[in-house]
Length: 62
Image (tube, rainbow, N blue to C red; front, top):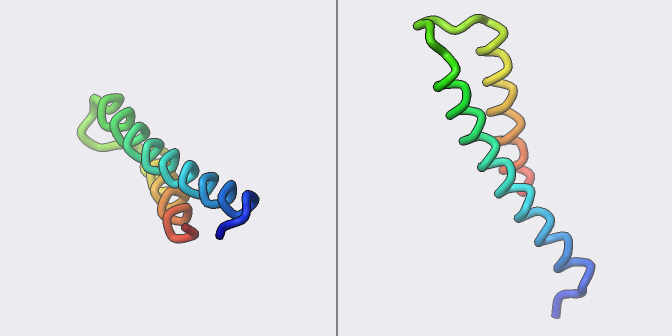
């Protein structure tokens, strides 16, 4: 039987994964809708790539 502390950690991991996935979609949606020009600036690309990398890292930890 799982201990209460272990169950809590599992729930925290699941919550962090859900938040990471939601954040990825939310940021991507915001990024796509905020761009009126055809070519994004390098800082926008860097920010989006960092967001994707952090979310992927959260998923890989899980």
